[in-house]
Length: 275
Image (cartoon, rainbow, N blue to C red; front, side, top):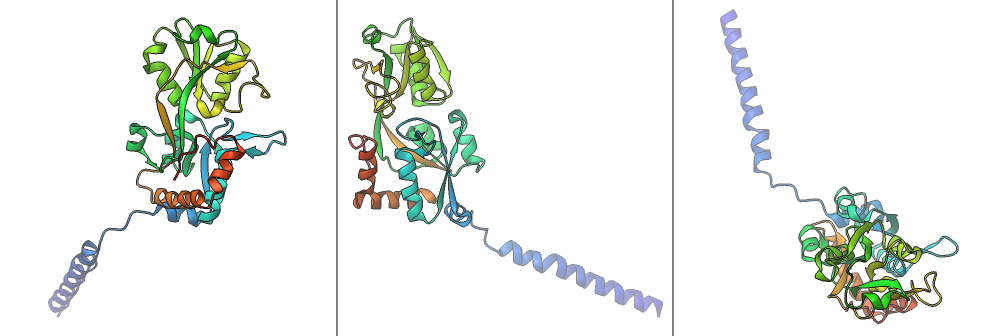
């Protein structure tokens, strides 16, 4: 009798193991792989888009009432309104922008970011919306000295920027002494104080930031230097489906005149390229 019971128990256990090993797992192995998470769904799900930026006029800066304003601020608000989310502007270290993006501390880099092949390989970038170029800024009484050469000059540009790439890669600056600083605003400040001779900044930064009626009336663009043109884009995480949606919205803002109106407000209508 004991032998019969033992045999019966063994059969039951074997059957249970067979079901456990070949039943559920077999179904799971045949199931399709899970779809990758939608970045757009992630952003709309939390109800806000966290925008990584730095402070540089006229794109993102504080007015006399300590309110964040600028072309990119108004542009970001307009896109987020159509997207149905709130914009959250977060100041970042520009040199660590891709790290912040991939860590999901921010959802996009939206701060006059120059489109390059390297950045396109590592991030998903929107259609271009503005043209730009790098310019040299110096004091009025020194500008003529740097029209043909920057030899011996103390040059500054924002770390991780197109300005730094120019300063370290263009033969024009081969005999200059270059230092990276944490922002374009700091670069202009260094030249204004006499700490540096030349600041390499975005052309759009020079508009309204230097010259008559600004805090830097004695600074001018060195007109003789003409560097390669660039284009601005908004960067999202690699493979993000948010990029296509934002491109659609930008086209809508161009069509209804909203983007042109924002650009004119900050004297940037002459460099707007979005269509």
